[in-house]
Length: 101
Image (cartoon, rainbow, N blue to C red; front, side):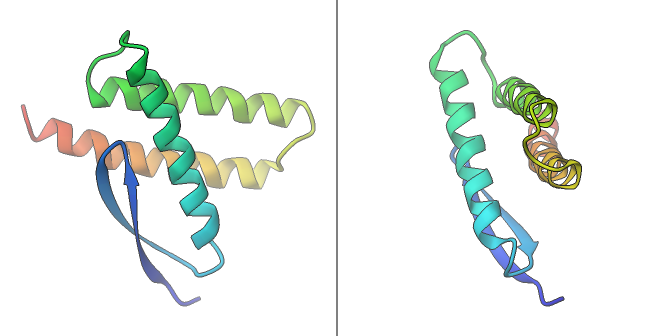
């Protein structure tokens, strides 16, 4: 399957990933969603640091996915794919944070 390069901006940072053309629109939508969730968490003023904001956003999104699954929403395969994408994005963000220490 042909891969293309895609740059996603999340929480003010650019992430370059490879994806198939069929995944492009979903990945852009996911990145926008994650970005919005992270900005919402930051704007509460209760969570400091990008790594903590990322973890809180990941937990909230995972909770939403599990709730959707219980309610007959997305398929298990779709949930696994989205969680993997979120984990990959979080890993990239945390890796840059680790370099600071």
